[in-house]
Image 1 (cartoon, rainbow, N blue to C red):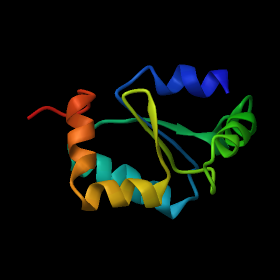
Image 2 (image 1 turned 30 degrees about the horizontal axis):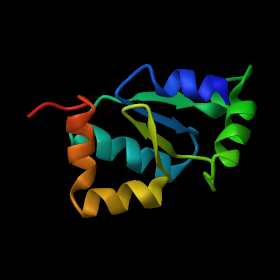
Image 3 (image 1 turned 120 degrees about the horizontal axis):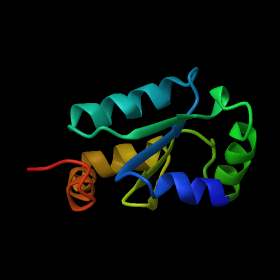
Length: 103
């Protein structure tokens, strides 16, 4: 859990993903489309702590565990949550407030 907190607070936008997850790819593409350059942590490529981080994300309520999105150091949610925020226009404002994008 501590590693998740540490990594999620290092950049304005952070996404925990798996390389084989199509929703992870979609969420990353959305962030890039909005002009953000998130830190992306591929859990399936981290042999040392990837599985532990996946379990920590599940314990935070992320089900499925990826994608798990943090903006401004705060847990935003999974793909469903991010898409909902994008559709109502608040995701972009969150990214602006966290200084992940500038306008």
